[in-house]
Amino acid sequence: MFKLIKPALSLLLFTLATRVSAQEVRIFSNEFLSIGLGARAQGMANSLVASTNDVYSLYWNPAGLADLESEMQVAYKHAEYFAGIANYDFGGIAKKLKDSAALAFGVVRFGVDDIPNTLYLVEPDGSVNYDNVTLFSVADYAFFVSYGRRIGRLAYGGSAKVIHRRVGPFARAWGFGLDAGIKYRMGTRFTLAAMARDVTSTFNAWTITMSDADREALLLTGNEMPENSIEIALPKLLMGFSYLQPLGSSLALRSELGADVSFDGQRNTLLSSKTLSLEPHLGLELAFKSVFFLRGGIGNLQRETIWDPLQTGNRTSFQPNVGAGFYLKYLAIDYAYTDIGDNSVAPYSHMVSLRFDLSKDIFDKNVGNKDLEETATP
Image (cartoon, rainbow, N blue to C red; front, side, top):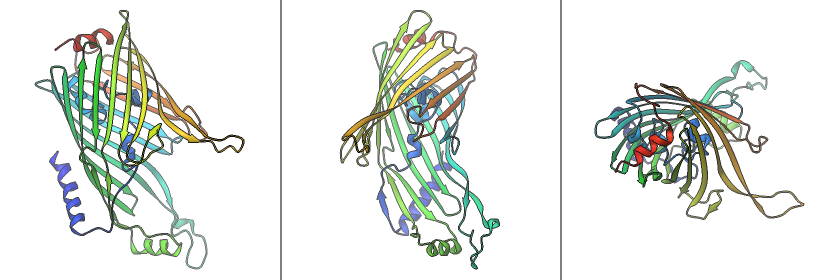
């Protein structure tokens, strides 16, 4: 843990000491961490803060790590956005500890690769030389170290994360932040949860690394020169309320109503003001004997302005999500399909996530009965 935190803190302190040219709070800072992690969650419109109970809890709510169903879990997730232009990958591992606790490590990468660098496409004499075109990547990374523990009906946890962002050879940033979450079982079927993301605010220290030749090329084309800066991501509160309803001996229906509250300015959400924005979402998961899962959700509710000259006013838009899961004894495969509303604006996206459960006695009971037994424990 300290090997990851130390270089980020050192760079941040160095940047502060040198008095960088700007320091500002930005809306949508580190927004790649708001996309969502795991196909199960995205099939439910990211409504998983109260229901999460596996290695993906390090992202959704570290308190959920206390409910691991196996001694160790290893997970991998891959998603493609905008018809494969952008790729989102995650790898993580979680280990159950003594005293109803668990520890997890994870890495997230969101990037666009093979971007042409055409700064030197045109030679000084005006001729075009395609041999001067090179490729670079723009990628964001997040490294997580998370811990969760349960005491009776209450579970709590936290995550320390190091952020690294890179724009090819031109710029890079390091940042550090903390997340904290809780889960509370209300009776035998209800779970109430909250997760504070960037609870201490997250600082990204940007350093411009482009060469003098790159700077000259940008100036010649009339571009504004970027400068070193510190970017601040303000806290964000994720809330969830989950209800589990057994439907006989083989079926169980889980529903979760969630809300994301942002404090970094007005966003285009269903409810918003100059100081905060609230985005509600709803997810459903139907389980058959802990083997087959069907999921659905509604999220990304927004107020849109109608630009049609024959109409006036605003309208409410939303994004429906669907998904499925298939769990074997040691392997869980989840799939989600999103952006199935207006594909002309946001091309379809497929998400696949895998989870390996390294224990001998998992999935031997149906979801409904198992969860009811757990929630009945004081």
